[in-house]
Amino acid sequence: MAGNRDRFSTFSTATRLKQLGERTAAHVYRSQTRRQVRRSRLTGRAALLVLVLCTLVVALAYPMRQYVSQRSEIAEQRKAAEAAGRRLERLRDEKARWQDNAYAEQQARKHLHFVRPGEISYIMTDPGAGAAERHRTGMAGSDRPWYSNVWDGVDKADRPGE
Picture 1: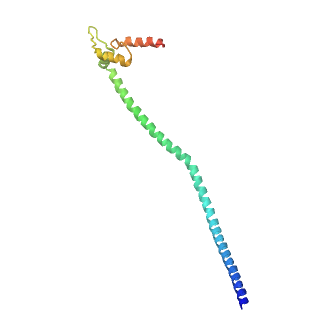
Picture 2 (picture 1 turned 30 degrees about the horizontal axis):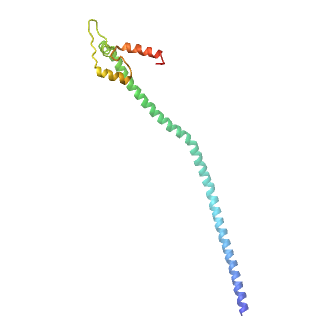
Picture 3 (picture 1 turned 90 degrees about the vertical axis):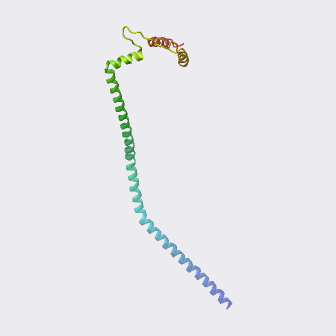
C-alpha cells in the first residue's frame, strides 16, 4: 500500500499542479484580455482627446499671449495719454499766464533782475551764503549779473583743459 500511496500522492500533486497552472494561465489570459480590451477601448478615445486638447492649446496659446500683451500695452498707452493731457493743461495754463503782460514783467523782474527806466535796483547778498554757494557749486561770481555767468560758462566751454 505504501507504493500505491506514493504513486497516488505523486499523481494527485502532479494533477494539482497541472490544474493550478491551468487556472493561473486562464486567469492571466483573462486579465490580459480585459486589460487589452480596456486599453484598446480607452486608448483611441484618450489619444483623440489628448490630440484635440494639444491642438487647442497650441492654437490658442499665441493669440492669448498677444491678447494679454496688447491689453497691458493699451493700459500703458491710456496712462501715458492721461499724463500727456495733464501736462497739456498745465502748459496751456502757463501759456495763458505768459499772455498777460503783468505776469511777463513780474517774471522778468524776478529772474532777470530787470528794472523800469528811472528805478534803482538793489541786490542784497549775504556774504556767508555767497561763499558757501561758491564753495558748493565751484563757481565764483554768484553775486554778478546772470549774463556774466553765462558768458563765463561759454568761455570755459571753449577751453576744455581747465
